[in-house]
Image (tube, rainbow, N blue to C red; front, side, top):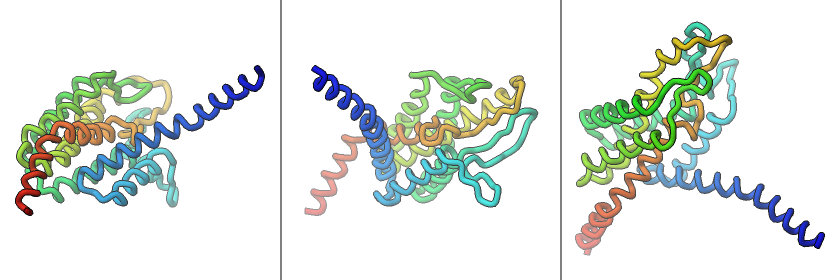
Length: 237
């Protein structure tokens, strides 16, 4: 009897240890695959995810300068900064993809504007938690970014995923963080409060929306991608 109990306890301990590791592995594998779908190599995708995680989860200081949460300005008792892993890197990647994939600026502005508007209405400022959105409403920017990319790039699927990432990332950044920022800063707080844009790093809405939009776009564009691959194979023959 005691042996059976001890084996059960051991099994539970192993479950508690390995289940979180397995979940983290699945999350990072999914994120890495999404970056590969954007056109990055496996090594580049791994570097992006690792750098985003390192700058997001750890406070990195160089000569007294915080590289993880970059200070922007102070407003009353509010100290506003931007997280490198959760916002700066996604912004840089979006800028890179716009020029690398030669995305139409008119389409980019259209996609970002639509996602920004939707994001604004599904998010709200909270002095204790920052800019928040309830489930399942925070998925609406993801769905809208993917649908717009599918409609605009149905015949050019290679640009669809980058467009979904750019419109999703920048749209959420503008609609949630920038448009609600003044409203958040005007809220009364009794002590100094740090407002960090992209503060949840790789689990922030800015970061996740871009990744999830790419994954959903891949599902929506699957048939079109396979059709184009078959045409290429026939042309090669």
